[in-house]
Length: 406
Image (cartoon, rainbow, N blue to C red; front, side, top):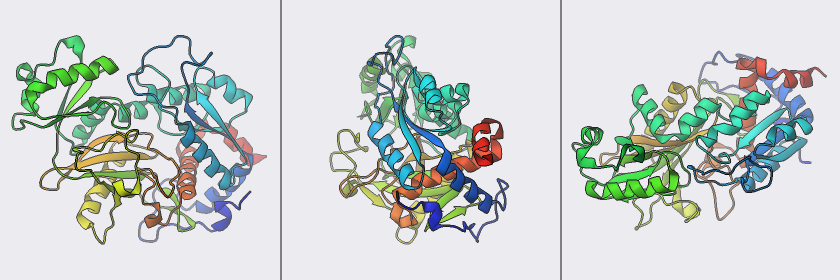
């Protein structure tokens, strides 16, 4: 096994330019020692999406409002990175109804959630809800936060409540009858000065599946019907913004970069990316149809893109802090004709596929610019979660504390 990242950084340092936050102030060496011990002892399960068609996975098969994917290949990349940084006992488990028995049989101390769920509504929240019931701590969003982030209409309402700019929108469910824009009071209020285009999408989804750009209001009825027939869930109608398209990632304050552990005074904002649109793209096309090659993304830097980076950092920090987030999220952002940026949606489980020379993920595309490798990012997310659990969730980590005491 390769030497661990911790061995390369025996003396974690804090960021000199910012005061320490209240969370575990002045205890970087303690965190370092805890991680060193835990990596050698912990049983860690990386959980990916279970397949409902397998025997024993569910009691009854039902629909998937959110387009399903196992994410097993990404889970394997995360597991490999965890092994490289020194975690000696890593296993892969599917997210299904047998999860509790498997966690108990493997004596799992900590789980890493890399699943969008198996089936049913609000599936992004199911695995974390089970782990809360089982009493197994995890790397990932809690059930309420996962559901909030994955429900585009609820997330956008939260943005509005916090005063964070988002594109104008309404939602519709066909249980209320057909969507008729000219007869819909909410639509007329939101779009009184906007005649098109519009973006129509599922309220819960991934990889831009079933997202449509509709030029005229009179064509929205058919688009809403089509998406509802696929998802049987609310449909989001959003005003199309004609400017450039961006992403930004944000995670907790404990980060491993430049070969050292840093504890910042606030969330760590990174991966400021412009999505490069093709001539035939009005919005970024599904990654399942057009893989994210390096020609499709452009990393932004404060030197060449100061205003864009400033806006993205501000949005990332505000969303993370105002919504009390605790782990990695990627925001999709679009600018209007004047360059003002608006948050469109959040991805509570950003793609963490290990980058290659040909393909990358939006979160990993510019890691080198931040003095980080893929393994550094994985280690950062693990270290930050351990730090948060010991600082704020001590009632959930009895088994981890026992490992430190043996």
